[in-house]
Amino acid sequence: DAGITQSPRHKVTETGTPVTLRCHQTENHRYMYWYRQDPGHGLRLIHYSYGVKDTDKGEVSDGYSVSRSKTEDFLLTLESATSSQTSVYFCAISSGSLNEKLFFGSGTQLSVL
Amino acid sequence: DAKTTQPNSMESNEEEPVHLPCNHSTISGTDYIHWYRQLPSQGPEYVIHGLTSNVNNRMASLAIAEDRKSSTLILHRATLRDAAVYYCILRDRTSGTYKYIFGTGTRLKVLA
Image 1: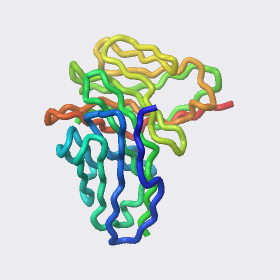
Image 2: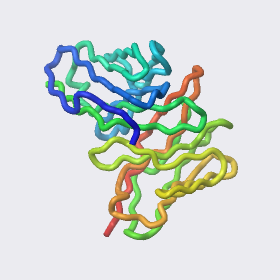
Image 3: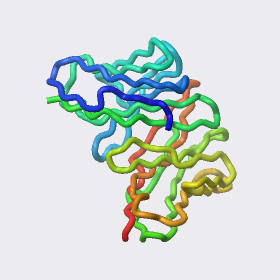
Image 4: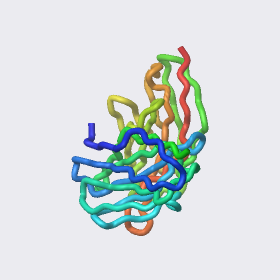
C-alpha cells in the first residue's frame, strides 16, 4: 500500500471555526490532490499541488485554501467552516509520470455543526 | 476538462462476468484511461489503466476500443466483494499540469 496518512480521521467542529486537514505521504510523489465526497456527487476535486509551493484550483475550491511547504505534506484549510463543508475528504497522490496511478488515503470525516 | 460517461448503476449475478462500459469521446492521443473502485466506507482504489492495447491484471481486464473513444472494464467472475462504485476517468492535462476529474461512477450491485 502507498504511504498516505490523513489526519485527523474524524473531526467535529462548529460553524465559523478554522479547520486544517493534513495529508502526509512517504512516496516522494510530485502530485497531491484533495477531494471531497458527498452523497450523490462522487468525488470532486478541491485543490491540487504539482510541487512544493505549486498549487492550483479544482472544481470546488471556494472556501478552501491549501499549502505545500514540503514534498510530503499537503494541508487543506477551511478558514471559516460552514455546514455545507460537512463531507468526507480524501487525499490522493501520484508521481506525475505518463504511466502513473493515483493512490488514495483513508479519508477524513468532517462534520461542521 | 476531459469527460467520461458511465451508467449510474448495474447489476450482476455472483460468479458471472461483468462488463462496465465507459465513453470518453474527447480523449486525446496520450491520455491513459484509468479505472478505480470504491468499496463502502473506503477510499477509492486503483483497478487498472491502459493507453491503447487491452490490459489484464489480477483484478480485471480493460478492453479499449480501436478509436479509443470508449472502454470496458471486465470483471471475469463477480463476487460479492466486487460490489462497489466503479469510476472511469481520464487524466486532464489543461494548463500543463495533471489532474483527475471523477464523475459519479457506476454503482455495481452483485446478487448472490
